[in-house]
Length: 360
Image 1 (cartoon, rainbow, N blue to C red):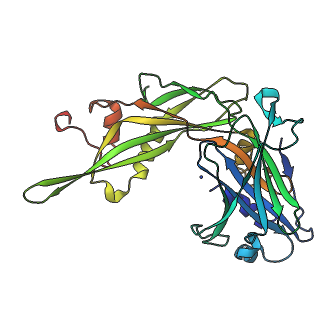
Image 2 (cartoon, rainbow, N blue to C red):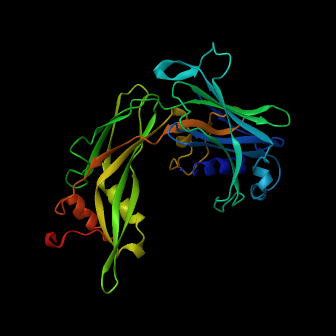
Image 3 (cartoon, rainbow, N blue to C red):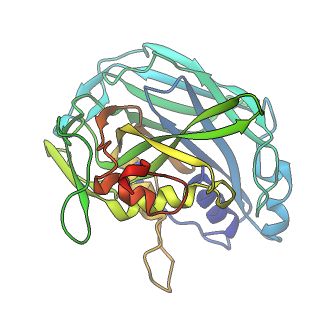
């Protein structure tokens, strides 16, 4: 695959899961290839679609990548739209467009928007175009969503893809009413278990840890205390499940929990007193088969030879159009007493968490 194509695909992974495999000849004549990245989440207020282009042809690809017009479609040159289609249930509770449907239920049109926050790298920066549509409350897991990329001057569809959404059913079983805590000797862990979501293929727990910072200012005649709330997101290990599995489970290691908290607090802030809040939120994030396969195809496999075919479900191009669900969560109590291992281990990080003086 041409270097420009490969770098574009890798760059899309930074924008935080039957498809075909495609392979292009580096000796082919010049050809423009749409690269599309879009992930639907019915819990999001807005949907973003990224559309760029890579190409095959002679020349210095590094130079091409630094030219805005070489990798981006000019404003107004393409139309990005999404259609909602009636669906029928197939095997494993998957969905397909209802063959009896003669027209989509609704149409979503995406507006061109130029962002100015792209980091410098192999590709043109800092501007990057995205296509934006307000979809709050409008996406429904009962339907199929089809994405179309259309050339404005000719009306030709140059790329298309479709996806179903993550369905219902996700519910946390463990931790239960006993709350969030780490147990065991040696490598302590918190056991997590949940009912899977319909059409969910890959899952990842996330713990949102809350704490307050206290800064006391002495004004001579009085003390002023400024309390600043903070939160840190700690990701657990990914787990893949068969679409027919009803339950998934994963251990959440205390070592990851503590290391992420330590690394997320700036060294310059270590001397500020901090108190952990006695609750955490546990998110279970889940994605469809297509997004899971796309992410897997871009993982480092540990081999010196990194050549592999790229997974894509974009007809006429590269990239992925899939779905995920990231907004489901439940709140759990944590140990609050200063004598517990949970609180003592936070203090032992040396980043500013403290115990009551009489418990030292």
